[in-house]
Amino acid sequence: MANIYYDADADLNLVKDKCIAILGYGNQGRSQALNMRDSGVKNVIVGNRKDESYDQAVEDGFPVYTIEEATAKADIIFVLLPDEACPEIYNTQMKPYFKKGVLLNFASGYNLTFHNIELPEDSDVVMAAPRMLGQGVREMYVSGEGYPAFVAVAQDASGQALEYGKALCKAIGATKKGTIEGNINDETYLDLMTELGVLPLVYKVFAEAFRLEVEMGHPEEAVLTEAYLSKEMAFLWEQAAERGLFRQLCLHSHTAQYAQLKRFNEADNNMIRSFLKEAYESIRSGEFNKEWQDEQKVHKLEHLDALRAQALDTEVTKAEDRLKSRLK
Image (cartoon, rainbow, N blue to C red; front, side, top):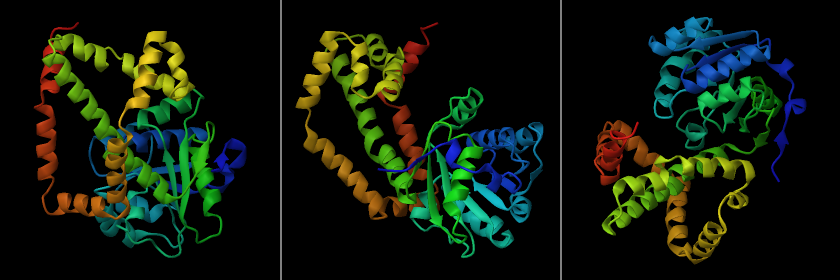
């Protein structure tokens, strides 16, 4: 069983007097910076390019610098940059300016798993990864509820890397709910499996169900409303998180419970398993990382732009637009 750490298991004193730089003041960066300040971390600074996020950090009262300047000042660096932008920024704007023994904290394991960056040998490298969108990281801290996170060690130069990782999780509010210890690959593989395996199946099911039900003569407005636009499905998944995947069925009628459980047992596991296994192997082999690197560097996101345009040109999207234009 994985270790789960709570507030009492983490020592905030390890980090509260350090200079901590937030590199990337987006949704996660802003929320984590505000949470740390409210947790009593005394010297939080921001490194960001000159854009709206830079202005927001100034408005929020943080000292704001270029990425190079913030890196040079920091004892601990939160690398909260987009996965695809991180390697270039790391090599050109961060690596030449590291203090000796600087601690690096990543919120995503992607570039660590696939060795897209070279770590400084004398540094602790950890991952404090909220399992929550940036807005939720802040809102659930303020409400006192907290949110779960992963903590992992990529490199332990000091012999205390895990303790530092736990302290950082406490500073951003993740040990109140519970921080789960794993390794870097856990976060990378599981995150990518959701994106490469689970969600594509979910989208395909909804799209194919839409096509079938409309072909059978049902109004597209009713099909979309029943499927997800009513937000009943969103409530279902919220209750799955609170109660459990199958325990939330107690909220459904007996007819719904019988229908869902019977068809669950009849669904073709082999097709689903094959699709998911293929996705997993593309992660483990590095095939997806290579494909994504090529998409960025060689194709300049041309295929991504085409895929987005294709998705927005589907009958489902067009029907959504027609229905939303008629609803109050």
